[in-house]
Image 1 (cartoon, rainbow, N blue to C red):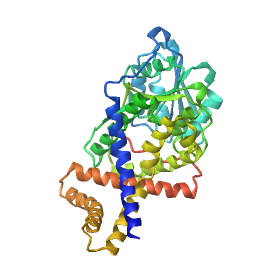
Image 2 (image 1 turned 45 degrees about the vertical axis):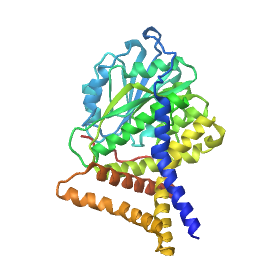
Image 3 (image 1 turned 180 degrees about the vertical axis):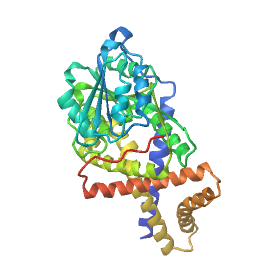
Image 4 (image 1 turned 135 degrees about the horizontal axis):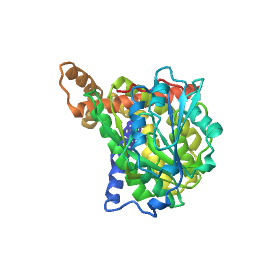
Length: 396
């Protein structure tokens, strides 16, 4: 019995360490001195693209978004902008109209019944936009601000006919001092580095950031109406069709981090539910795809989605080991470590109440809370998801 508890404990800890440290570290080492390989479109060869995004109540960010689109560097005759309005109840629609004058054609699609982002995109692609007119579609979020050359950096990679999707990287902006902004920035930065390393070493990254990515129009498919993570659904479809999905480190977008731990917890819970929806659709890639895709899908995504289960297994197995063998130094050590693991977030909350912030303590609390959100997201998935409509994260 003790051997069983030890095996569960050490295996759980190893899988956590492998996914968060060994796998990224190994790829970072292998990616050194490697660069993104061409061929690339020259400025005179760039394809015709459509930029598409959905907007609900985005009055705090939509004016800046429109100004940013106006300043983008891309041939005027080769770019159209399509905005799907998901029946907003604020001034989003009016602000778009006030800022619509720009060098690129802008098409605003008003939908009178709120249906969620995935369904807005489905309506645009099925009813409003003729996909065959465009080689590439750039998907992005309404609050994302792009570097002026971002669209060129995304589009140029499609000269390689093996590539079906190109993701941008996110540089987070902390506009106000907030509870977990630094920790979220660290996490997103780590994810960006890992996606770039996967591109360089394994030829594909697993899932583009939904904030901004480009996809071949021929690879866009109907998104299930209740799916919460439409970006990952389309990303995995690209890989399923045996195209490459890469991340271009020179395609840069910016996103602010309000950093509310309550808002981020709700967002991560929703993301987790969507991840398990996508796992139910694409788990055959674990054995049907080439070994590089299968390895990165398992190491980068599935192990992390199961992180909350590994943490719980580690806590329970260490506790039972200690109950059966109280005199053992190692049983006491791991039981004490598990207790400390649970006490440290309480210490962070106590210190925060007296305005003392310790980054490592906050990062540890962030890690545990986000894994709790993933666990609750799994529970939500088992209950079934009827709609993808949700209240967006508060904008600053």
